[in-house]
Image (cartoon, rainbow, N blue to C red):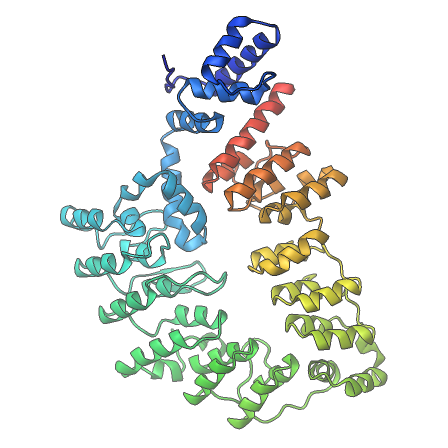
Length: 560
């Protein structure tokens, strides 16, 4: 007869049962051998503990030990855990943990119907219809993890790519506010329209149905002059799609003065700029030639100064090596900037003017000691300028006030040609900058530069970053030489040791967990929230990894 798990079944009891069974087998107990043959006919002649655990799982009707543990966890896990999962589902549109939310939803699909907020987030059209029919305030009330309306959960959510427009239209018809907004804590107004467009710091993805959602929201009364959306778009990419759409919508409402004028509630007001001028500063700073031309054609001032540095945009273009942008600004009336000292050196290097660079060094030899020229060359992925400066004696290990090196900047901008030259010249591979405590490899992962990560990993000993990218082979090589790095500690809020830095790829996660544990990673460490690595993994929907870590914690305690 097949055995059955109950809420009273203890994992610890099953572990002990497996060990007793194995002990009986090794003592020659024929009953134990018959039991094994009946439960697991393909078990090896000399089974180990894992083989016995597998057989025990089969006795309970589960395919393997991991599946049995997961089933037992579901039976015994406290009800509060569902609340935590729902919290993750509803937060993903803000914190960006989309894969974690997807994993949780795939494993616990019933959670999608928990409330109007989860139903809207997960695309349950029929459930939304039912709640709108039975809950009078369903479309207008706020709630859930973010205290948003259901419409906000739709536009910020990235779990549903097919039904968002249908649900949004139904919510608007039921009274949802197309201008609902919330403050991010920095007095920045995030609207439902902002959520659909995405982008911004962290480069959050645009909603799969963004074009239709934005058109629907504007038709319903949303203000197309969306300050936060314009800012977010200015940070990512160089296309004109959203500038064009929002500009035309404002034109249809005779509201272009919002772009051209100053005043409270306008992007750029806090630094004395019009919205067009503010956006032009960002376009020039990122060499977005098409955007700069578009903004200038609509009235942006080519002669304005950058809102952050105070220097003219023409000077910024020269210092960045953006020759086409400098010419564009001149064609719209900007006066060429005359640079001196360190600025002149940087501009000459970025223009690849070797005779002038040599002349400036000869005139002012101390300029070679400044890290800024090489940092600038690396930040703009300019291999020729990097080579010129290194040849003339620039230090590849120089850093700015935040401890950020040229190699960090090369990684940030995705230039392996620059990074390779810096490394050959002696750049420090695993330097941690002061602000975020990241190495160049860590930056490659955080800034989504996988080709840079793949090339840096064989050179790096950053066990946190190697764990996060799931490179078990390199992690093994590093820990074989320096096992103490399995517990490398940084005082961060969420991830003090490598076991908290697991990748989102389930297959890779298991491999790095096993590697870390084998080299002594401590599964009992807790982060600032009081979670151990297993609990942190489970909150991200990494259930198999959590089980592996819990096994290690148990084994550690058992041995002690």
